[in-house]
Structure formats: C-alpha cells, structure tokens
Length: 327
Image 1 (tube, helix red, strand yellow):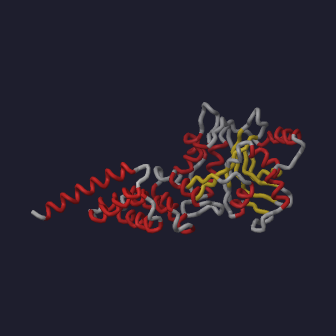
Image 2 (cartoon, one colour; image 1 turned 180 degrees about the vertical axis):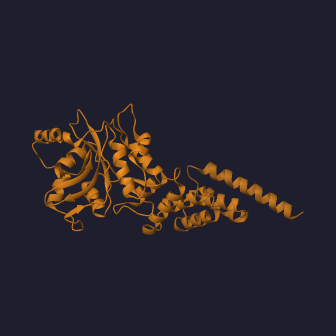
Image 3 (cartoon, helix red, strand yellow; image 1 turned 90 degrees about the vertical axis):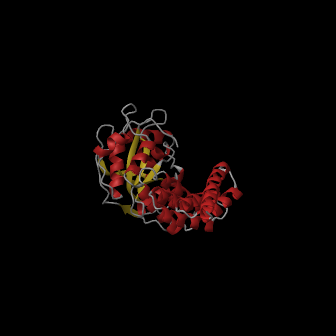
C-alpha cells in the first residue's frame, strides 16, 4: 500500500483542480464515462445518506474528522479529538493511510479497503454506508491531500456528495471527484461493523482485513470471521481465523471445533491440522492430537519443521502417559 505525505486541504481549492481538468481537455475520466454509458441496473439513480454525522475539519485535521464520521456511522463513539493523537502526524502535517486503518481497528471495526473503482464506492453508498476517500485537490506535481467522506451521488446530475472540510454535503461533479480521487490511486475505505459485510466484499480481501483486527480486538475479529463464513462457509482462511481467534480468547473447545471444520473442508491444509493438534494437546486429547500432528507432517510445506517439533512433543507426552499407565 502506498502512503503519501498529507497536508489536509479544503474544498475551496476545487478551482485549482478544475483548472487541471481543463488543461487536460475536459475529458471525462474513464470510470465516470463508463457509468455514463452504462449505469448498473442495481444502483439507484440518486442516494443521500443524511444520517451520517458531520465534523468540520479544523486546521490540518481532515483525517481525524473524516474517520470520526465513518466510525460513528458504524456505531463507534470516537470523536475527532480522541482520534487526533492516533492518526495525526505533526511532522507530516496529516495522517497516513496506515494510521487511518489502524485507528479504525482500535474502534473494534473492520478497516476494509475498497477496490479502486467508482462503481464500488457508489454501490457501498447505495447500501447505506459512507465511504472514506483520499483526494489530491491540486495537481500531481504539487499535491494537496485531503480526506473526505462520500455520502451520496446523483446519476442524472453526474454529481457526488461529500462531507468535506468545513462543508457538509458538498456537491462535486462526478468527473472532478474521479480526477482528484485517481491521484491517490483511488484509495477508499469502509469502516465496517464486524457483523456487517460490505456489499462489495470479496472473501480473501475480507479475511485479510479481519486478520489485521485480531491483535487489537480479538472478539470483534472472531465475529467478523463468522460474518464472512455466513456468506462463504468454506473459505479456508476465515475458518482458520475463526479457530485462531477462539484460541486467542482461551476458548479451546470452540477453537478445536473450528479447526476440525477447516480440516473437513480443506483436508490438504497443513496449518489447520497443526493447529488442531495443538489444541487437542492442550485439551489432553493426546491420541487425537497425535493423529492430527501426523497429518500435518505428512502434508509438509514451508512450516514442516514446526509441525515436526509439535509431533515430537506429542509423541513424548503420549509415551510418558502410556508408561505411567502400565506401572
């Protein structure tokens, strides 16, 4: 993921952006043009999310302000003041995307980067969820980076509606929005509740986003894995993640059930067999642990040495247990 030096700007600089568009011949950018030619049948013609909170940007604090908006829309209580020390970097006079993602996770939310596609952003907004975006409100050679929140659009008028800077529901031409957004490589993010999938979510991308939540909010991560599995019941990383989060929460029996489900759905998945062996060992189920560990070793892979170490430990414990039983 790219990170940029950010200096939050205000939409009053849109005139500079428009000059840049004019210099390029006023050509409609490709994604907006594609939507003009063929509007997706499932998208409403017009959407406005009038319940999304608005926090006016102060000084260079567009990062905390916009993050508070999407976090509160997802049910969190974070304020711009609380988020400022988490995301604002004084030396850079702004917030990098990595800090924005991490701060989202600290709220117990899934920070889900969207695919770099305007239709994806509009689809999420049409589902009732705001989208946080990064724009460059100036020209590429002299960037003025700015976070904003997409809260609506109008197909007929070819407009996007943003909470931006000091203006709630700022109306911007869709082509201008795309041009400014494209300069950040179309960076966009959903702050999603763990029990609510983004409508455009893909299984691997969701699992990656949830895995980043495990350390700060393991219970939220467990819920998010379970949410993904409702739609993709055999997704192996989500199955494994469900077991790992249960294990991290000290719920060994639940972890064993998740790992067993993983091995049934994906018998070739050595990591799942190894994790199942570890949990069975800790539950005192030595013969079952040995069986799972042997399967992991037989499958091999880049972590074969780890599998062999666990199997050796189980073999020793089982031998000691059997010897004690014969005395």
